[in-house]
Length: 116
View 1 (cartoon, rainbow, N blue to C red):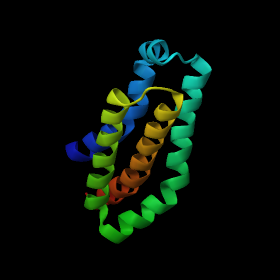
View 2 (cartoon, rainbow, N blue to C red):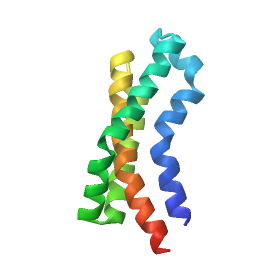
View 3 (cartoon, rainbow, N blue to C red):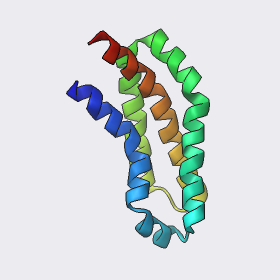
View 4 (spheres, rainbow, N blue to C red):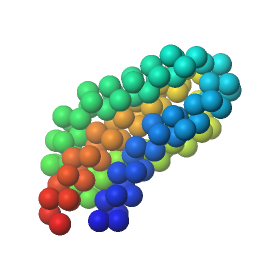
């Protein structure tokens, strides 16, 4: 159960880190509160749009592999957010990658919770 909880936190981390570091991100990238909120919203929408595909992938490759893949993608998004985000468009792009990671991980986690 600890692994499941950790995976859930890891895939949500890109969005929550942007929220927690909003003041610094706005200052460094020259964004407004509205544009930062729009970036997070677009990232969540990307996750919602890719969720049906994430469920199919979890069914096809198995729940553990889907969770591992989602965690790897989320980790990549976190690193890219920290090192490569230079403006609003790159911030949105990396948050969309984080949204896809959520879409891959959540179905696998739901299957694993059901099995325990």
